[in-house]
Amino acid sequence: MDQGNNEIRRIKKLIREDPELKGMLVRSGRNEIMLDLDGDGAADVCFSAENDGKTIDTLSFDLSGNGEFNLYLHDADGNGIPDAVFWAEDGDEEAELIAFGSEVEQGLVKLAARLDALMAADEFMTEEFGVSLADLASYLKEYADGILAEIDGRLNAEGIEKVYYFLNDAQTYYLATVDGDQPRVRPFGTVLLRDGKLYIQTGKVKEVSAQIRKNPHVELCAFMDGTWLRVAGELVNDDDRDVKLALLEKMPELKPMYSADDDNMQMLYFKNATATFSSFTQEPEVIHF
Ligand SMILES: Cc1cc2nc3c(=O)[nH]c(=O)nc-3n(C[C@H](O)[C@H](O)[C@H](O)COP(=O)(O)O)c2cc1C
Image 1: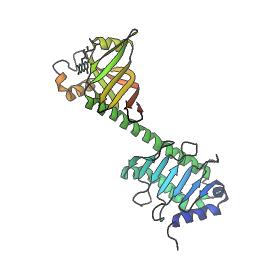
Image 2: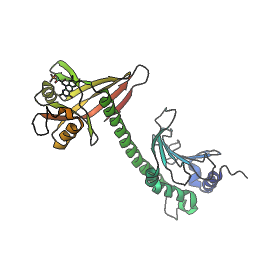
Image 3: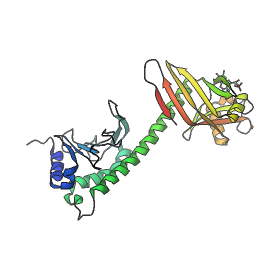
């Protein structure tokens, strides 16, 4: 007997026996089953058993609403709980690994348990049991949205970190401000990442500071190893003493010129920022933070 798709066969049987589920079936392959949960004609969820077929090892969801699967939950260790999250944008050749490991497993236990129930208990699907497929669909959507928000947060955190390390490693960047109808530009080197914010430092007595006070829109540019980074956005003043101390800690060479209590040292962080990494050989990478 073919052991290759036991689990898939069991789910197929479940689906065959349930008219509501049967109506949702979009594809019934040897190793995968796709269901259209919301009735829009496109598959929303895919169960697949690519390995030994004893367990469902990948669940894919279409959260884009356009028939493209973009969220993948993968059970790499075969314990029945997804432990890796992949995300693919439309047109991506390969899905990107977003999260992996026991933390994800913990976070997905609830979802896995619910799906387990779906697969294991026939009565789970029936009206008498009181759990409708529509409820399940909205539960899955809500849960997946939660994961997505977390993924978004992580991606953003990774993005701002990438900007920070580039500026840090480049050592010098050029900061442009607006002075009436005249652009001004000068070399800068201070950079700090704290509480998810990207800070730069200046002195309140400088013209650059006065220009930013009048018009907070700035752009900076740095170049390193064939790649240039531009960050355009607005700068916000932050007089938090701890932030000033953190920069002085990181760049002690500034201590002869500035102190956290001198009424001159100024920390500014980016808001509504767009960072663009460019090179002659690769597509630009854009990060918003
Ligand atoms: C490599 C380098 C890095 C610098 N980094 C900073 C900096 O992070 N913050 C700052 O206020 N000035 C920095 N300066 C000094 C400014 O470029 C200089 O004070 C400039 O004149 C300020 O602009 P402004 O004249 O429009 O006020 C740096 C200078 C150099 C050469």
